[in-house]
Image (tube, rainbow, N blue to C red; front, top):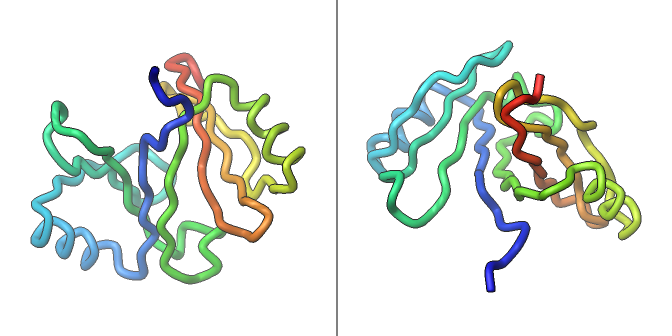
Length: 130
């Protein structure tokens, strides 16, 4: 049986983007590709596509209001219906930190938090998202 709603992405928010990219490339041999965002953001290829594990992204604290001015690591969980899962989060005592947005050609995304404040992302894949 396949486990549903599995983490599919990690996101690092860092103080010094250039320094952090160089660090992770040097330590883990990760590769970075600029992603089209209104601010500087990079996708991280954390291994070969056929290897187990997930890829991620990295951006600066200055461009991430939800970080509260501090470094942040966040995972994103893929869900089949984002609106349904946002309702589940709220119904279970959690909150929506960043409302549903389109990530063009990728899907629909929202940042939520569990009742204690731990933030996580949820994404519904939709190549037609605009």
